[in-house]
Image 1 (cartoon, one colour):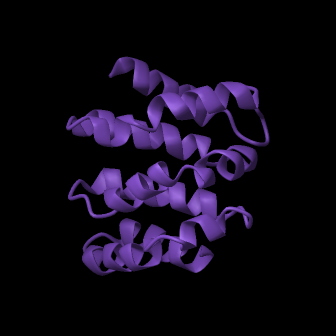
Image 2 (tube, rainbow, N blue to C red):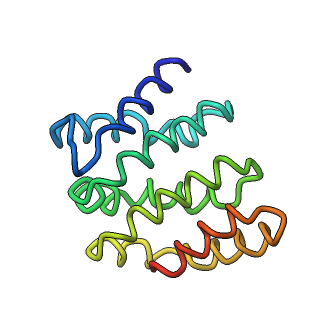
Image 3 (spheres, helix red, strand yellow):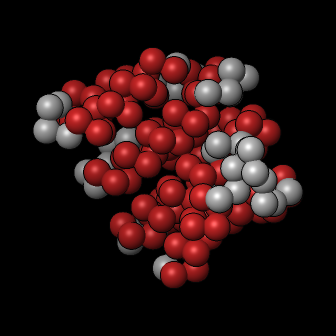
Length: 143
């Protein structure tokens, strides 16, 4: 768990404006972590995994070349939107927001029922969780 948190924290500082890593390193991290999302029942590991993937999704080349081409990953992302753990859903919506900022990635997202799921998240968040409602609305708007 601590190793995943460390990767999350390091990747937070690996931004498109100030890259710390080459694309090959990001690709290896993506392929290493993407399957943790559904492979474990440990919610803390799932949340940290989504945070890792969210940080990676800020990079256009990775979102376009890897995230959007991985049907299994995209399907997992949609499944996670139905999860009952708020942080898991929140960070998954963040991945969708980041991916949707890249025009060439949007069609891959729109092939899935992602908008319907985001509407469900928005509806479920209601006024009780304005942060989750806000990010859901932003993701819908971007798509």
